[in-house]
Length: 251
Image (tube, rainbow, N blue to C red; front, side):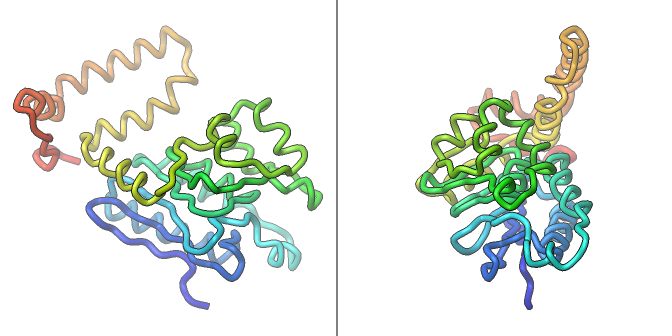
């Protein structure tokens, strides 16, 4: 079997592609291991953003049930992939142009931005094989209120892209996923590297803070950034009506 996951760096954007079409990009030991290797490569290259995409008609079918039936499961590597997508400093974008099932929804939900084709369907089918959507509930329930995903998790029913967006599971529904992802990547590149990193961090941190602590922390961050070199370059570019050159500042 050849490579199941590859990574390509282009214009500071790392694109990770899952291509295990024989099992609908199921989360096999090999695929998860190669996802880790590709994330390592993206981090080492200091990519501005990471895009997770797929080949074939399915983004990811969830767990590789043939492997799971052969021995005791070890969820640690999969948990680590989800954590890495959530915790990396750079924005992560899921590019979904096919069906998503079970664990694949957790993989998708761990990304900051999720772009799906409007024909995409989703299903949390775990209960139908006697298990629960346990691990993937962590990223999913950080995006979606429990009451809005309860029916899907309890019944395994199929739902569509419009429903996924309405509950907050995905951020963009598109007829051209690649074009939408390219536009988002260009938007990331338009921002100062540190400003983008700090924004990703505050999106996760601020909701966990008590209000006065949040204002204090964010005021300190705002003052620091406004006094820094990126703000000077950005405001000068704004005055001159041009795009800032962030190469002038440290990453």
